[in-house]
Length: 87
Image (tube, rainbow, N blue to C red; front, side, top):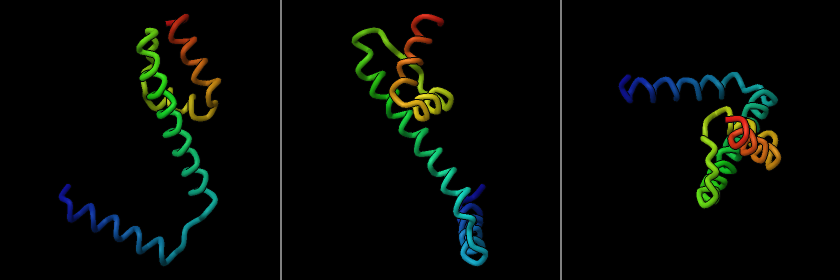
C-alpha cells in the first residue's frame, strides 16, 4: 500500500474516534496487556544479556514475553527451568 493510503486510513480512524468517542475500559485493558508484553520482552532481553556467561538463552517471542510479563520474575525463572530441563 502506498503511504498516502495508510495515512488517509489512520487519519480517518482518528477523526471517527473523535466524533464517536472511544470505549475507555477495553482500550485500557489492551494497553495494559501490551505494556506487560513489552516488560516481559525486556526481562528476557536482560536475562539473555546476563545469561550468556552461564549458557542460558530463552528466545524472545510473543509467547515467552507474555508469560514473563504476566508472571514477572517467577515466570522468567520458570522459562529458564523449562528451557534447561525440558528442552
